[in-house]
Length: 163
Image 1: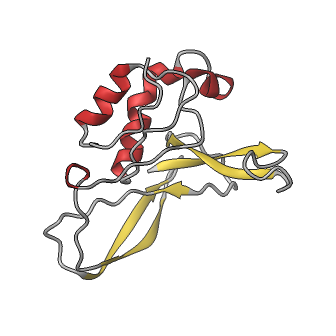
Image 2: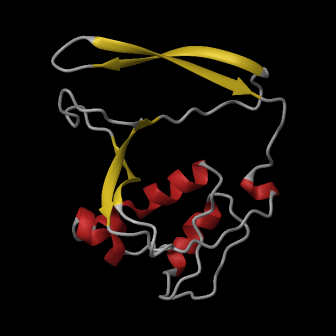
């Protein structure tokens, strides 16, 4: 599971008159002692379904262990459809992200060196959700980023500016 973080904004960068407030944005690794008591904390739970899974409703329970003790059981229900989405290797999925995926955009929140140390984890998160992390960049992206993304199955990349 990933912890859903919140950032305060005065306005949306895309819609300047949109107003501000706390917005869900970063997905961070869930740390065992990271949520104080009496605080609501949304979680992002990833479920990977085998191509061989039977279609229909599948029920499960998610057990959350609490500190200093105890646990909470949460019901989980998945509806699996009888469809198959082609793999990234078989598709022509591509995208161009408006945001920046570079160190200067992450440093104010996570400190120096965070992006270079963790960028492949971010790329993998997007790829796991069929969202190729290519983007139209104003600044050159290292060729190694494209090599890594391509090695994960993405064939169609926005390479307007390669460094």
